[in-house]
Length: 345
Image (cartoon, rainbow, N blue to C red):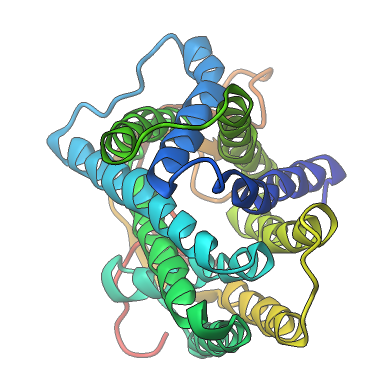
C-alpha cells in the first residue's frame, strides 16, 4: 500500500479531528449558529482555489442533481454543524470527538435502509457496538450527557444523509459540491446567528473560526478525496476514521480535559465498531447498467476500461461511458454498487 496516500489520509483525519476541540474554545465568544456559519464559510474559502483551477462553478445541471445538492446544503451544511456545536457546548470536546465516529456507522446503516447498499452481520453488529459506546459516553458526561449525545448523533445522521446525496452527485466534483455547501449554508447560518444574537466576537476569534473551517473542513475534504484516489474509498476511510483520536489528544493537551475511564472504554468500543463496519464487504453476481457520468476514477478498479493516452494520470476525472456489465467480485457500496439484493448473497 503506498505510503504517500496513507499520510495524506492521516493528515486529513488530523485536521478534521482538531476542528472539534478548537471549536470548543470559540464557543465562549460565538453562538453555535454564528460559529457554524464562520466554520463553513472558512471551508468555502479553503476550497475556492480548487474550484478556481477548474474554471467552472461545478453546479449540477439536472433537476435531480440540484435536489441532491439542496439536500446536502440543508442537512450537511446547515443542520449538521449547528447540532454538533450545540452538543459541544454541553459536553467535553473529547467525548464529542468520539461521538463523531457515529457518522460512518450512520452512513452504512442509512445506505442499507434507503440507498440500495447491503449491510451484513458484521456491519449490523458494528452499528450495535457503536450505539452501546455512545450510551456509555453519555453516562460519563453527567446530567447533560444524554442531551449532548443525542445532538451529536443527530448531527452525524445529517452528515450521513449528506454523504449519500453527495455521492450521487456524479456530475459534479466533490470539491465543488463542498464549496457550495460551505458558502451557501455558512452564509445562511451566520446571517441567522447575527439576527438572533449580537455578534460580539473579537477579530481574533472570527479569524480563528474561518481558519479552523478552512483547514479542518475545507483542506481536510480536499486531502481526503486525494487519498481516496490513491487508496480507494475503503482504505481511505480506515485512515480517516482515526480523526476522533486526534480530537481526543488535542482536547487533553490543549484544553486540559482529563481522559476518563468511560471515554477510554468507549474509544475501544468505537474502534472495534468501525473495523466491523469497514470489513463488511461482500461478493455476489451483479449487473451494471449502461451509464455515462463524470467522477474521479482509476483504470485498475475493474469498472473503467476506456482508452486513454499513455501519459494520462493513474487517477483522473472526465466524462466517460460504461457499457452494460455482469460480473462478481468483492465490493463495498460506492458509486457503481448501489443495487438491491435478493436473498442472502
